[in-house]
Every structure is written in structure tokens, then in C-alpha cells.
Image (cartoon, rainbow, N blue to C red; front, side, top):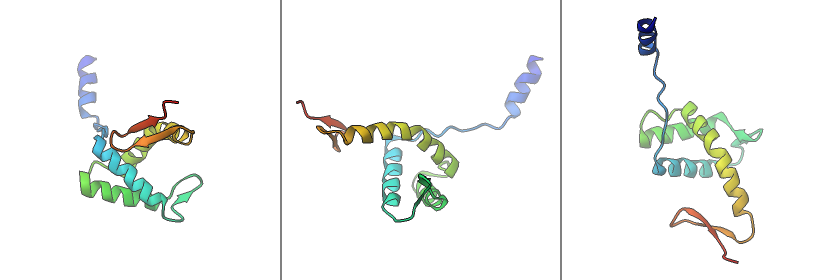
Length: 109
């Protein structure tokens, strides 16, 4: 019955997707860089739980309560492949990063 289907959809809890702004992603990456410089913050190729707790606290203080650990982890899953490719490119001779334009810069030769 269509009425039952609509009623069920209306009563289902809504999952709010996290779509951070460029400034929020920049801040998140900055926090990750800071955490990566602290010895012992990684375990088995991933971040320790206390890293996510610290990042969650900072993101919530600066951008509000929607930046939960789970939302941050999901966003990082999406960003990781892109950051991995970027890291590989930047490790290649002739490539660099332009911090003003926030893009990869390449030697014309």
C-alpha cells in the first residue's frame, strides 16, 4: 500500500550526510597532519581511536556537533584514495604543490 510506504519513510530516522566545506576539509587535513607527527598515533596502518576522539573534539568545537567520529571516518574513506594519488604524484620528479592555488604544479619539461 502506497500510504503505508510513505508513512514508513516519514517515520524512518533521517541520516544526515556530512558535506564539509573546503575550509572544513582543509582544517581536517591539518589536524591529521598534526596527529601524524605525534609518535604512536597510528596502529596497523590506521589511526588509533584517541586520534579520532581528538579530531572529533576539534571539529565539533570549530564547526558544530555534526562532525562525529563516524562521519569523520566515512569522509576519510572517501578522501583517502584521492590523497593517495596526490601523494604518488607529488613524489614524482617534476611535480610540486602550489599552496596559493591549492593544486598540483608541474614542471613544463
